[in-house]
Image (tube, rainbow, N blue to C red; front, top):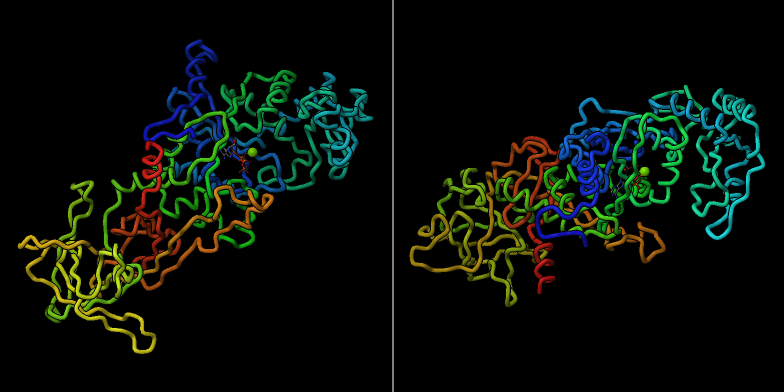
Length: 565
Ligand code: ATP
Ligand code: MG
């Protein structure tokens, strides 16, 4: 796996750029681009590409163009354009005035099409999509020429112009490159360059009814923008000859080069936009920004920080070999970032009432709690303490097994920043038999959580004072899928591996009063429970809703230790 404990991992594209600069290639210019298709929200895989392209530009005094690859009107929408821009900005990258749309080049690309026809390198073909496919041949058999391959230049020009003018219905004709129907590379067997689609485009409206294919539009857009390093994922490796063919046969102002790297695959995650769209449309998640989604919008809502995601992208490195990155590494990066930044607070997720029978009624005292032990500069805050408290239901057991050190009948524990308390009596619900309340005593001599006589306790619990606590909803998340490669054991049916327990909503949580006014999007460590973030959509001052970003259990560190052993 291309991962290391800390620090950035190898990045072979960076070495290519360094070499190019050393040899004075492209007059020392570095121009990259990030070319999303606006047909879905960005995901963590796109973040790898964004960090790579914008990162190289930043590190080598270059520029990175932000280009929407909007050549297919059927699946593209303005909503996606806007979300993609917001996500790139959120991730921390600035494209300045370098925002481009492939659709801005439609006229130029059309002119290149005419040029290809005039030079004998393209022809109009009347075969249906199905026929084109069956004429293409296979990996072991050559394809067959289209009956239209020999059309005269004049006839091709006439038909292509009439395709543009809207004279033919969808699918009636295509413009194809005239390359080699026997090429061992299927992409070179007279690929389609243009298709007819009488559809409105989100930017060009009804100006066009023919649309260029990706393999044609992409290299030419790169050339028009003077891209020096056109970086894409490995599945385009076999398309590179076609990329170069388009550059070689059109009178372009610049010669870009394509480089391929391995896409990011993340365990327990699906990353294809088609699959993510299905999850959204079929209601398996609440939307593209559901905190369980691997989208940047989902991760933002979950409480992942842009810094953590960028660090993750550095640590996974850039190589050519496909691999599956452990989700634990991403969570490790999130935890590491939040550890220094998130203030500590106390919040009880599943409350159990505790009454301190020897504590004065109506008394409330303020105890001092540390905001962040990792960063003394964050200071302290007062937390109220009184006779009635809540502790975590899981922190009490009536009949504790051997290794349970927390509260139990007759046992003493420490309340964080407060006092030692001892459980004297268990009150049960007369109907259900469930533990309803604990009656405890506190030791007034242990204020601050330490006994002057040196007496030790085995557990420290978090708590909140009942009458000052803020009721809140808290949402806990687990992996969206139960298998590292969703669908692997079900012939690709990834939904068969959906985790039915990926979301737990807790509605009776009690938080310390400092959280009442938590700003949407602000993050905290709830002591012993993990990192949490006030939901940017549903949380409001006075009625907080928190998402658990990540637990405190560091699965990644454990894994690293196990590997070293
Ligand atoms: P998907 O397969 O998820 O639908 P895509 O490749 O079709 O993604 P684009 O909008 O074309 O989506 O992607 C924009 C850029 O992001 C491309 O350069 C693409 O190579 C890159 N990219 C997409 N997915 C990943 C990934 N998992 N890892 C790294 N880069 C990716
Ligand atoms: Mg793509």
